[in-house]
Image (cartoon, rainbow, N blue to C red; front, side):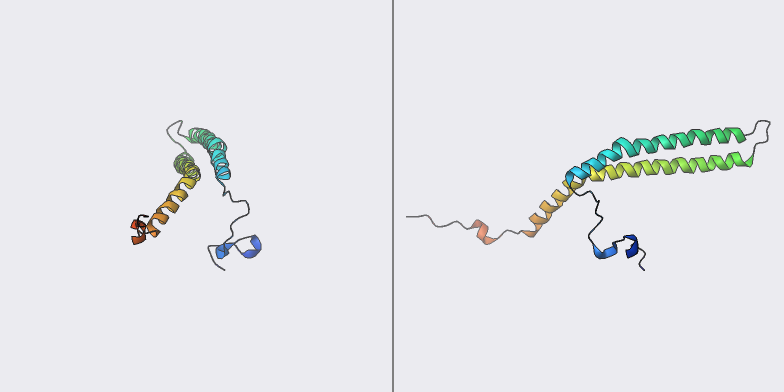
Amino acid sequence: MRLNQLPADLGGGGSTGGGQPDLASSPAEKKAAANTLHNEIEPHTTTAGAWADDETSAVVKAFDAKDGNGWVTSSAVSKAHKTWSEQVQNLVNQLSWDESALRNNNTLMTGTDVGVGAGVRKVSVLDTYSPPPEH
């Protein structure tokens, strides 16, 4: 078994190529996927992260010192809350990057094709050849 692929019985393609049947490959599908990331997934992720922030802050406050002796749980939850916030921000940043990549993919691929084409075709002496004038 290879670590970089799913077993064949789970639908993994591994290195055989072909891709997933629902892979967005046309410009319209990529635009739709980018719009879904921008309009639904990113905002919902941010909202879920904010909800968790509020709830976690309430837990930290509930276990915090009221008479000078707080629970250890308060500082532990506070540290976990900081890590959670960083992870949510990293996820939102990754979603934003994925959206940008989907939107710029067509431009990138076209630019690459033109660049490769220009590098492959070299100037030939025949490019400067002009037929003799007709009499």
